[in-house]
Amino acid sequence: MQKSLMDLTNASMILKLLGDKTRLTMVKILESHDCCVCEFVEIFKTSQPAISQHLRKLKDLGIVKEARRGQWIIYSLNKESEYYPMVKEILQHLPNQDFKLQALEEQGLRISCE
Amino acid sequence: MQKSLMDLTNASMILKLLGDKTRLTMVKILESHDCCVCEFVEIFKTSQPAISQHLRKLKDLGIVKEARRGQWIIYSLNKESEYYPMVKEILQHLPNQDFKLQALEEQGLRISCE
DNA sequence: TAAACATATAAGCAGATTATTATATAAGTG
DNA sequence: CACTTATATAATAATCTGCTTATATGTTTA
Image 1: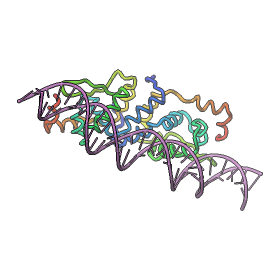
Image 2 (image 1 turned 135 degrees about the horizontal axis):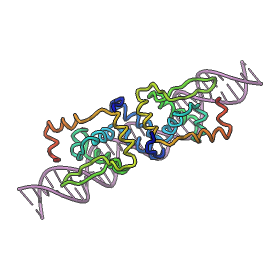
Image 3 (image 1 turned 120 degrees about the horizontal axis):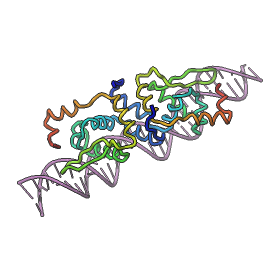
């Protein structure tokens, strides 16, 4: 069972990054659905800059990537990241968060980004 | 492939705990060998209180456990922890750190705790 | 092109984190 | 029992983190 090995410096950086409940939840959500910033703002009931800053950190280490679509910027998991294998395994220990996006949909708030 | 599920609050706490290079290395070392505090002090070239404090945090969340043996306190991974399954998987992505203990042995510093 | 919307960046602050120094506790030894 | 060794705890200082407010950038639309 050989797994992709990463050095301890990088590994601890990634774990610290995921060691924040907001960011960890973001990444878990992105595991099943791409999302734009405004959706995260709704989900986490926090300010847009706070969300942007979390996403920036995730992007800086290559965990997520962004793609502009009109005025929205859609974030997704970067499955090409050298860290993705470990991240994916971690996510498998976490409960699905789809209900959070479903709640948005019921409020009609998800449509805004489609 | 159902894994042990943990809630996001606890998961982020564990990841934050492991998101420190010293602690992550400690846990990786403990994966293959029990260790006492004085060995960690040698390995990390840092102060004894700093090591004690890292171990305290790991112990507080149940990642490691301690056992007194004479004047030494031997730390080991707590495999009964509800978090152990995830921790174990994370460790599998990290390079073996046995060489650190071997270096101690060559200096005759490991014997002190045996 | 001005206004509205979505997002990013910058600056500043409060709370958390980690290391250090000093001291306390506990066990072993002469 | 004094002394040494191993470890823990407390207090403190320096650094880091994450949030807020304010503002800038970029896109769409009237």
